[in-house]
Length: 279
Image (cartoon, rainbow, N blue to C red; front, side, top):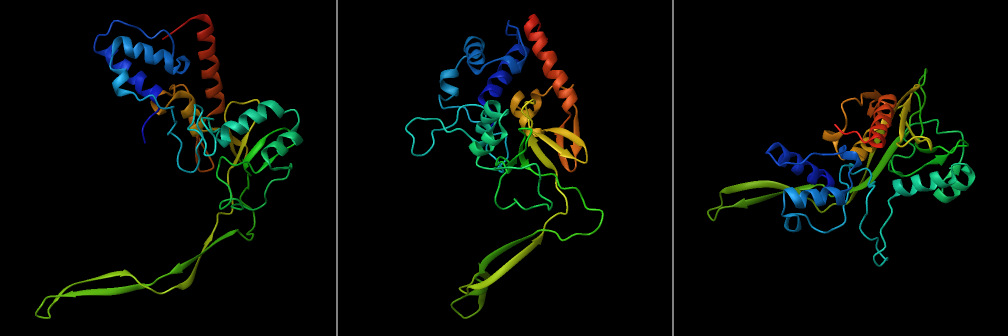
């Protein structure tokens, strides 16, 4: 998948600087806008009109399970030129507006207001992506996946059932003109048998929620918390730009970024920006 345009421009400017271009970056990558990098690129690299299309920027760093993008998106179907707002961006905007009124927030998101989460893992695997809220609690937290801890004693698990039509197989043979067998291969048959696949889901799952006081979603399991990995990557424009001071950790089996080191790094960057420092 292609990196964001902002990241491409910054990397090409870094390469030009290493090759002797007489300019300096006066602030960290995260504080640059795409327009500023585009102007620097035009001055010191050139060819931006030919190499960079004038299409809206689309963030492709998120996996296929979700489609969040902090930048402009393509127009939605049925709208003439109006940008489509993805679910993650819309949820953040609504939470910032109605965090003090959880009931209104739940109504705007179309989910229930409840402090009680699921007691069994996997109930929303087939119906929700990780950008679809499942509930809002009384603190104004938006839950994308309920935390379910592994039970101390065996309990019934959720089971995913998939029904499909099995056409079977049939063998096709090709012969030479003298009757000798040339080749034989199998292709889909013409039957229509009803088949079923049953998959037992895990007995536990990591919780995912958005606290209105924090910039990214939080993964939680057994009192261990971490920021959503892809939310931090999107903030910094890719893995190569995430500062080394931000540590990683596992929450359950999810790789996340440490909350404390992430907040300290972002606060230091903001302080340096306000004081006019650059490194």
